[in-house]
Amino acid sequence: MSVEDNKRLVREFCAHFGTSNADGLIDSMTEDATWWVNGKPHLSSSAGTKTRAEAGTMLRNMLNAYVDGLDMIVTKMIGEGDIVAAEARSYATAKSGKIYENEYLFLFQFRNEKISGVKEYTDLMHVEETFG
Image (cartoon, rainbow, N blue to C red; front, side, top):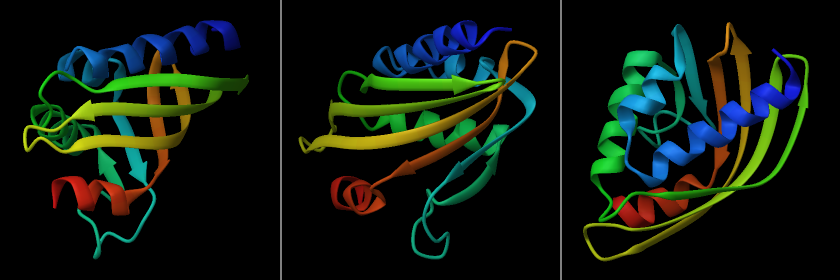
């Protein structure tokens, strides 16, 4: 696949957050995909490396915490080979009534037209502040 095809897949992937489509997010990943989030796992359950199944649980729990999906807006992308770096920002209202707004840098790795790896850099303190 071309870099432009991979960028299109990133846009499609991020659109699934806005419709709370956890199945779409998970189905976009290879069976052996991993999802890594910055931070120390002993300080945040979101941090560390997760398998596709663990990432699926994380994504379902996250999307269930919002009133009406998570708007994930990709603001910049750059790609090379099978890797796309995407800068993004999000906005949502949590079921608690709190507003969740965060910023991200994602590194997506692709294989066979699917995401084989995600590295997510974000503000986990804001996640904890919003969701506890």
